[in-house]
Image (cartoon, rainbow, N blue to C red; front, top):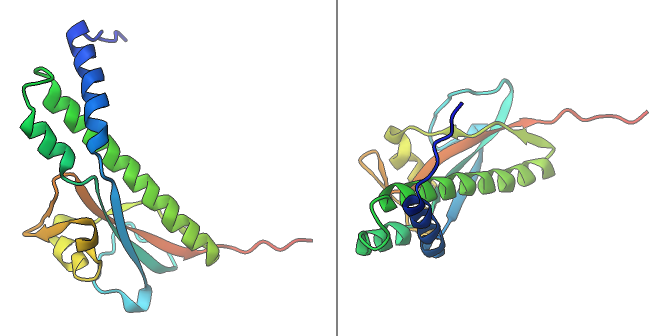
Length: 167
C-alpha cells in the first residue's frame, strides 16, 4: 500500500493549525443515570439482556474553535477547514471516551458494567435534553440538531456484574 506524502505546504498548515486551534477546544460533558423504571424516554437500541439502568450524556467541544476558524479562515492556507474538522472530530471522540470512563467508574462502584456507547438519534435530542441539564455546557437541542456544531448525545446501558467468589 502506498502512503501519500504530505506536501510541505500541507504539513506546515497542519502544524500551525493544530498549535493555534487546540487552545480553543472547550470539552464539556453532562450526564444523568436513570434506573430502568424511571427512564424519561425510551430508546432501546443494542440493549443488553438484563440491563438495569442507563446513563444519557451530552458532550461538546464548544463553539470557540469554529468561531475562531471562521474569523481567521484565510490565515493558515487552503486546507485549514479540513484540518479544523479533523481536530474537532477527534476532540469530540476523546470527550466521549472521557465520559465513558466517568460512567464506568460510577458503574463499577455499584458492581455494574456498561455497554459500548449507543448514539441517540437526532429525533430524540430534544426529549433527552428535557431531562439532562444541557444548558450547563452551552448545548441547545432543537429540531433534531445540536448546537454548537461539534456536540453529540448518547447513552450507556448498565448491567449487573457477576460477582466472583474466592475459594
